[in-house]
Image (cartoon, rainbow, N blue to C red; front, side):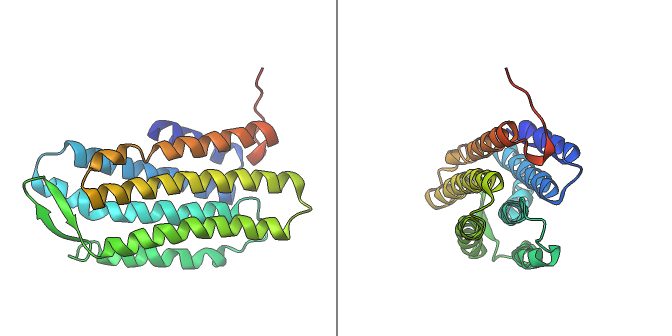
Length: 218
């Protein structure tokens, strides 16, 4: 999943002429890849200080995934959007970055299970993730109401919005379930949402030549 998402995102970025929305897609795939890499270390590393470090920084990757998801959907097929309008999305990233090395993020270390103990910051992170999903859905609905006459672009946006909501919804649900139940194996299901998102993305690339990419299938 990691390799495919990175490769396809980079391909779209190059072929689309390095457009703004394709850049957000590439950054989203990058944040997702770092999250997967972080999770793999948490599953395989033995030294406590190594595990603790990667527990402490994984929150920033989660927040980046959701902020970049919003930025991608918001900027998709929306050339009139000013880059300054996306500035508020940097606020949750800054807040989480400031609290990463504190006990609000990881309050301690469970030596028996070799895992970090999440602090109250994660309640805010999960709340932000839920709000982000509703915000993305709201962006899709709002643009649907104001762009009824734009047939093909509107259709593309509906696929993008649906795919992103499925991806982020699956991702958030599995992560929250893992943290609250301590059954972290369910985290392995979360990345499957990225496959669904890229399936939607691949479809609109084939059907509508999105990002200016012309693909041919027999």
